[in-house]
Image: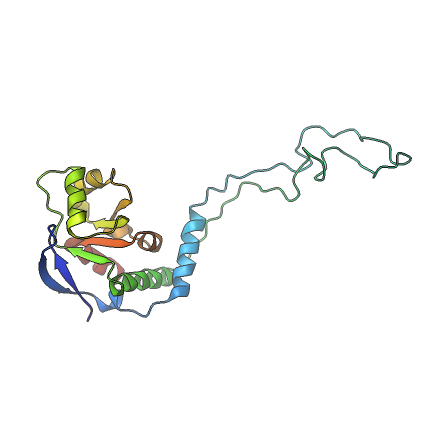
Length: 207
């Protein structure tokens, strides 16, 4: 059974907590992680790129010179792809890049990354985000006390909504609800800071 030391917002140890081995002690599947990250990045693409083919570029209706007798290569239009200002061969058009990955693969990838975070010592369990005042400076000091990396993913429950206001102006810090954690953000940020209540939610939802 995997375990982690839970600390308070001052960095003092509180107790040792047992974690769900079905989430934090699985065999890491790198290929599943790759598939899910690739899927997330593809779904985030806007797909609004557009270029004009030779039929869509304005002009070029007249043959630039006669077919034979000039000594030059034959040309039918000044908007052909080989001309400056001409159309694009196989021009890109707006399209939807999104697709879906099987749920079992997404779950396996998430569990693989969470297992890796715990094994690498990049997971920090906090008993609760209890602050006297909801200020950015206060929360920044908390992250410093618990020795979180400058790039930190803070996982909270719905009742910790004031954390969003505190952390939104801290560079390199992102706040996510426990139900919204994903493989890409877990890999992007070096530290995973999670409260005890948020951990319970993660174990309940993703088990």
